Length: 378
Ligand code: UDP
Image: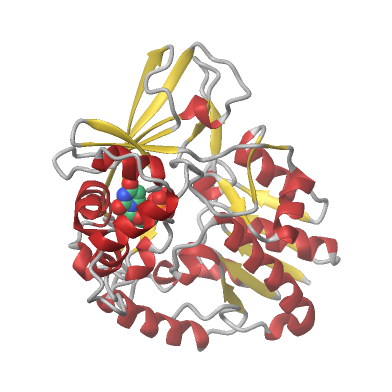
């Protein structure tokens, strides 16, 4: 079959590769000048540092098949995400672990003591936390919540944590050991030559044609047997029902000679500091040596029509609108919506790949009878 894919990020790249290997012909149109979507990386000409152009991406997964998949196309180097946080004039270790707790409370607690101590700080009257704030108060108590989560979250989401779902905080562990690995997952790493090289590797197949700097319009679907669309769901319908809300990020880039902050990611927990974090990109590639350094101060704000959408907001208003777009999409023939933007979900890279691998199997089974969504967005 002749298939059109819209977007050259992970979703369409993985889907296209699988279908190319099954003998189909794929054309990918991408409006940007590069592949890899928001995980695009680019070596800075002056310093040689591999820059995560749209913000930091760290690969982590429990899914052995996904891990094997990415390792087919790129050499991965071991990388542990060890995040620091500056708050109240001190630097702490994140995610909240025994070091953070002992430093914060000026104590020397052992794991079981710390567990009991934090349980005593926690608000145990909250039995079924619904909001971000309730989840935090239930699991770490008010002091740690206010120092590490409240300000950061107000800046990141532009909303009161009482109005955000508990699921956002569930992304972060609390550990009663000195393990400062940000993620739980079994497999973690960084592609040695960056994510763009990884995606280029995935796309390198004779049945795949990639057209960069090519904006998609619906009439282009003409003549194809099926379309996989990984752009914004509302954008496909020309925003006819209104716009789904996103947060966007602004990066204030600066350079330095030497080592500016000594780590890859420094979060700023206080609301008074206008940015959420500073990333020093050479530390994402600890196997490389660079004298110069490239850093991003990261600011989050509401996404306007010409901005790049990053984080789907998924509040009540957005979910109602999403339901209307899903209904529209389901009435449309010959198209499947994929990925973070196509399904309006907060997706990690490994989940994106897993879903794309499942889409390949589904397409082999259903062909052009593929539904609008392989995973329901609601
Ligand atoms: N978060 C926080 N303080 C931090 C880091 C994260 O309050 O220092 C909250 C914040 O609301 C964020 C969520 O936890 O949106 C998930 O964090 P994660 O690091 O997974 O965010 P991402 O890297 O995807 O932006």
